[in-house]
Length: 286
Ligand SMILES: [Zn+2]
Image 1 (cartoon, rainbow, N blue to C red):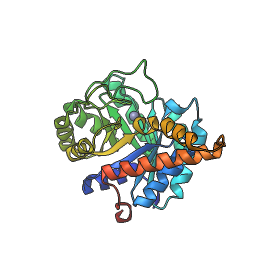
Image 2 (spheres, rainbow, N blue to C red):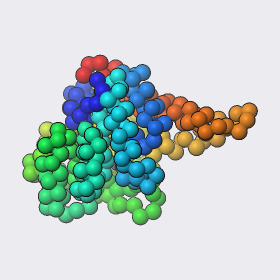
Image 3 (cartoon, protein in one colour):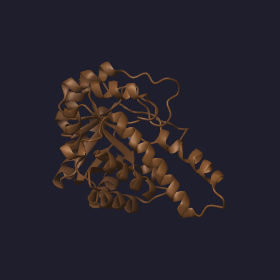
Image 4 (cartoon, protein in one colour):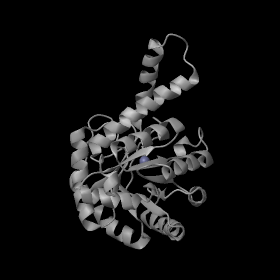
């Protein structure tokens, strides 16, 4: 229990036919709520932190916070720098003690993505840190609505070569998933996921897990995904919840009351995610 490697938790999830819930650990409210939910549900958990949040919360504060929280958790918790795009940021994350880093070279040409990913893997593995890469491109953004990246799907025939040449531990793939809100009904190419999962042995990751139905998640997991990222749908619910609570309060709420309401919101949402991904009751089997 405590701090765990993400690839180890994902391999167990793949074998047990469930998915590891991957939540953003951007603030202390989110971290406290999501770890408590995982402990109460006996679920493993992954806590991530992404560069999009750096302007509000510095990397040095956030990663130390999630690593410390993971070390004290009563269930296995993996920690990850998500979407690292340069060598320096990834080295800072490793120094702060995360168990996994993601190098996102998805907007690079294939050969350049291979070369940079391989370099990150070489250093990260020397420190016992797992590496996730991205092949194809999962577009959209969790925090911006303009200037979004365009998606392009992962080509199964590129995956085998990419994994063999880089030595990555887990891989984020693009099959119709997008970051942030989906425009219209999501159209997921699950046959593509199935083909990729048959071609390589490493666990596969889905970014942009917000807003699908429980049935969609079940089908995504059956196709071979073992880690699903959540943020946008849950975060969108914070403001309606806070205004409802503030409306029912007798006096102007103090800040710590709002912190408590926020924790309650993230807790409830995390329990719901854990339930949908089938990871409840699995921590004690690891
Ligand atoms: Zn992402």
